[in-house]
Image 1 (tube, rainbow, N blue to C red):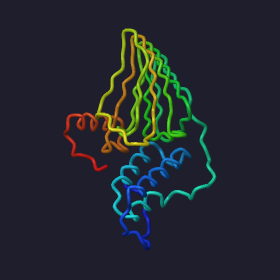
Image 2: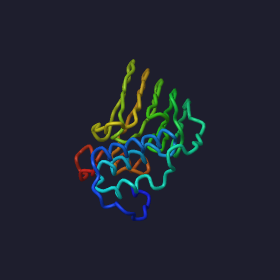
Image 3: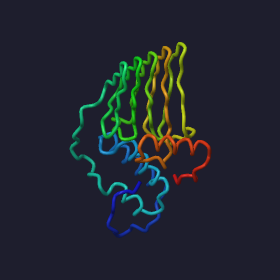
Length: 216
């Protein structure tokens, strides 16, 4: 995923320290919490920050973002998704704040968190499934905690192995399943921006070790 453009400036070729990289990660996290970056955008820019060699490499990552203290316009957060005898989809750019409740009864929700704006760096997804269940997609660098209970059902975690980065957003997934369950896809960087079908294929290939190692 290409980053924003940044006109060359004095000092851009100066090598950066770990402290400067950490400061850039903190600034990116603040912009994400303010709703200016989605989960996918944050993780993409964070990976570039960790690999940055010069101050110019870091500057380009925030060149399209306002300075600290700029006013924040927040979308109304999505809080409920309900699928009864059908399916529902939540994708594109939307805001999550606090808790998202996903209810699936003889149906299923498609919850794509890649383009979500997660306020304050964490969100809880309460997934209640009765003979059905949601499918949740998120980058493999995001911190994920899965817990809950199942009666004749269960959860599946597919795709690449978890490799969260320090300071990444936290997604808590709490599942309550009766003859159903949640499917959680962890997607590699190569799946950025791809349709869900292609993203799943890419995650399977990465899980089998068939993709080149991503630069982080």
